[in-house]
Every structure is written in structure tokens, then in C-alpha cells.
Image (cartoon, rainbow, N blue to C red; front, side, top):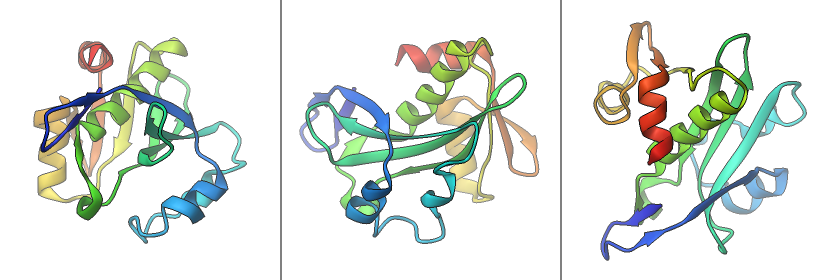
Length: 151
């Protein structure tokens, strides 16, 4: 459930396949350095959007790849901050990656490379519970994955 920042109301979410038209229609003002279109049609990469159930407004998106023993997150992004009205978006995106990892038999293990921004890395460590390996590499192990999926 996403939490509305001002009202405190919660909203159930769904993850759906991200489509090329979603990028053009809804994500044109998102981080311009991220090219979501490169993930379409790549073997082994799954691209999802997170929406509030019954609403097609994208709150976040994630590109995942099945590796030998974990899920690798290529790209993860939430709605731009000037439009953000909901909290817990990042937590749900990462939890979804952990859930996919569990479904594939990887015990929830997820890895990704964080932008080397101190605030963002602190968020991944202190809020998400990821371990910082070095060089921007972050890993989520089974106990943290289980907690996130229960979210």
C-alpha cells in the first residue's frame, strides 16, 4: 500500500508490464538520463510499472534481469519529486524485485548499482536495509527481502 503524504490514506498497488507508449505518454518528464526504451525486447529483462489499482498513473518503474543466482535491477525510478504525492514508492519497487527473486528460487536476493549520491545510498542502507558492498554495489539478502515483501 502506498501512503498519501498529506492525508495519510493508503492505496493498494499493482505491477504491470511497462509499455513503450507509457514512456511517451507519462514518463516524458522523468529523469532524462534514463532511457527506459533500451530494455524493451532485451532477452531476460522484465520492465514493470507500479500503479495504484484502478488508476493508470505510473508511480514508479523498474527494469529487472534474472541472473544465475539473483535478480539484478538495471533501473529503478519513482515519479518526479515535484509530482510525488505518495510515500513508500521506492520500498515497494525494491520489494517487488525481492518477490520476483523469491519466485525464481533466489531467496529474495537482489543486487543493483546505486548512483553514488550519499543521500540515496543512505536511503538504501538505512530505509531499505541493503548492504553496501563498495563501488556503488548494493545487495539485499534473504532476511531483508522477506521483510520488504511483507510490506
